[in-house]
Length: 575
Image 1 (cartoon, helix red, strand yellow):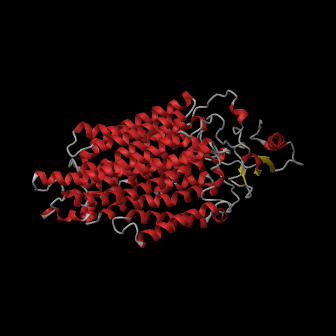
Image 2 (tube, one colour; image 1 turned 90 degrees about the horizontal axis):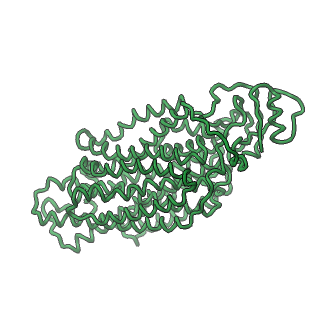
Image 3 (cartoon, helix red, strand yellow; image 1 turned 90 degrees about the vertical axis):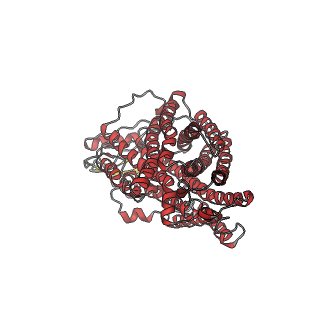
């Protein structure tokens, strides 16, 4: 269906109303009823040859601001793991407490992500974009993706996902180096302070150059907040917290069969089941059930969950392995991971460029899972005396597969019926991926501690003198910083290295099996054309939507709004 809009006078608005609904208003006034259906939302329009306009400077600067925010989030997620031995050693923390240093960050980010997704849907993407300016990591990760979906068409989005992958990879590269340098030469506390200048630069770019669709200006902040699903948010926060706490201490602090483990675990699972029943009731659900109506969408969500498990878990444990078994310093551990992280930048960008060329994403998703599974399995070939080529080369295949799996955003976005739900669908994928990351960290902690304890008892290693604290597996992580300067016989040191190697291998084996589940799930992905939907674009430029009854989650072609013939400064599009 074609639509017309005029920027001058009421006559243009009348023509637009006639084209959209077949009716003309009774008289020309300053406020008239018009349809705000997107100009590019019809499938038949997608088949027409159109020239692709060049993106404006404002678009590129806003994209740079979003990328910088994402870089900070990724750097925060990876910088602490390499500094954990130094932090745990200084603060005399146990292995469980050291793992919770990362687990707590992921947990807070996770429980806030569905909240930010719900806020962005209720308040509009322009407010969601502003929320990026200085709020938490969970908001950064999920709102950057929502804003990107609003700024780009589905057809071109793979390219910008690839460019956004540069920020992700650079953050992953900087994270270990920042953590290593500060923990070695300054103080690990500077890991937090370094964020401030980067966030400041990104915030300035977003304030001045981010231009997205608006929400009804007549609505108040209170009316928008009242639409949020508070009960669903509380259920998700409580359920996720109980589930992760019980998993993280099972087998180490408390036995699996103890009430301290079973009670919060069962409560967490029961509470998490509540939102799926309740989400069909509120006006602005946290996890909208309407988004999950296709097989491809479900498969992509399963893949996102598995992706989160193998991504964050191994980013946490690989630097620890380098310091515990081959006894590398924090800085040299970061150097050995550098080839993996640099290649992931190149591979991600190139692969995303190939998606529109080959006209689909299924082949890349399946190839990514094959690479990720093989690469994770290769990590089990590490031994107590790995060569420098092994330390640099073995993680490369895993890193490339993990980076390529960002392609899972595309099947999630194509599986929704309404183009305006693409950002929200992607937000739910990121929430599921972060939940997978949280589950991965939670299950790896007891795996490490239990295998370490079993290895100590099976090997009958004499842990006396300076090694006496290793008789308790809960001290294994904070003791890593003391391994290098130890003055013990070589044979004893080899036995200690084997204790750590067995624990890390158990994690590598577990992650390989989990990655294989993702590979199996990719078999059920269906190809959906990327050209069938276009980016929402305001049908009325330079005018103000004032109807407070517009539902942002309604299909846009059913909406009607009152339009004031008032020029709105800065209502230009992002491109």
